[in-house]
Amino acid sequence: MVPRILADPTSISCESLNYSYPGAPGPALSGVSFEAPPGEYVGVVGPNGSGKSTLLRLLNGLLVADSGMARIGGRDPKSEPFEVRRRVGMLFQNPENGLVAPFVEDDVAFGMENLGVPREEMQVRAREAIRAVGLSGYERREPHTLSGGEKQRVALAGLLALEPEILLLDEPTSMLDAAGRRDVMGRIGTLRGDRTILHVTHHLGELLDADRILVLNGGKLVADVSPERLVLDADLLAKNRLVLPPLSRLATGLGLAAARPRTPEELAREIQEIIRKRAAAR
Ligand SMILES: Nc1ncnc2c1ncn2[C@@H]1O[C@H](COP(=O)(O)OP(=O)(O)OP(=O)(O)O)[C@@H](O)[C@H]1O
Ligand SMILES: [Mg+2]
Image 1 (cartoon, rainbow, N blue to C red):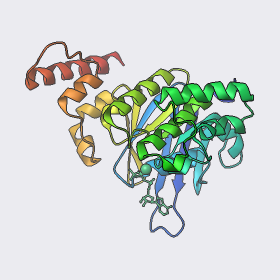
Image 2 (image 1 turned 90 degrees about the horizontal axis):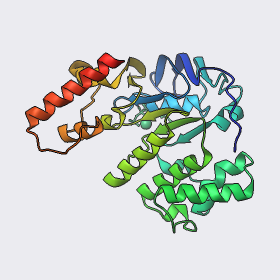
Image 3 (image 1 turned 135 degrees about the vertical axis):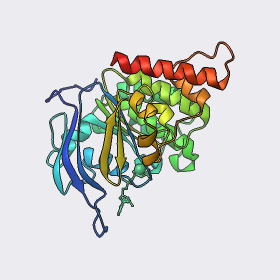
Image 4 (image 1 turned 90 degrees about the vertical axis):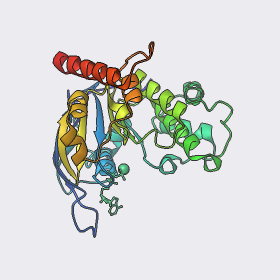
């Protein structure tokens, strides 16, 4: 197993992070500060172009901040990019960007190879991860011949096999079919607890049981709230182009059993009740 050393009690922290792409008219990210302790599951939402992917790229050292500070397990992605990437697994918004090897099985093993995981262990972990994302039989397929959703699954398998301490997930379910999305969300759920997860998505329904949700807009962090508060704040939702999932999906996401039929009004009342109870329990 890859050793896990935590140099700092805070898994992810950034303070007044600023970044402008070369030649861009304005900053892609400005003054972003937040902290995520180990084990926290943090959602990141916001309109297109609000800076979500830029934030993840700054955290894993793919981009270097113009000013401000980012730390991963106490380390600076700018001065210690390799140390940071040992701890961080990133799923790119476009899965093509993460696929590097000639065959699926090599691709899934790639991250482990870089970390020096012994060959036999690597093969077992790669096979198990490929099975977990529903791609058994695809081991010798060439990644570029796969569909978008299949590529996204291969990228996820690479991450699952690597078992990183910190996961940066940029729209990990965007190309998946409905059952695939449910399966992947279930998988992410099993990783919760001992891993810190930053999950960017346009589907608020995926974040109903997140520990908190960061809302980015125009490169600024405009809210850092619990899912319960966000769901009840119509103004915050509207200003940030966020839309609640349909009632039935909201109910399922909140764990409301579909054992008996309900009118939409009944369902809405029960959902509000659950949200109030959760908000009170925090
Ligand atoms: N390589 C680049 N060069 C110049 N500008 C860029 C580049 N990548 C992103 N931007 C700009 O930076 C801003 C933030 O982009 P980013 O990709 O972080 O947004 P996002 O929140 O991830 O959006 P989406 O929901 O569409 O994925 C946007 O205005 C975008 O046009
Ligand atoms: Mg993005």
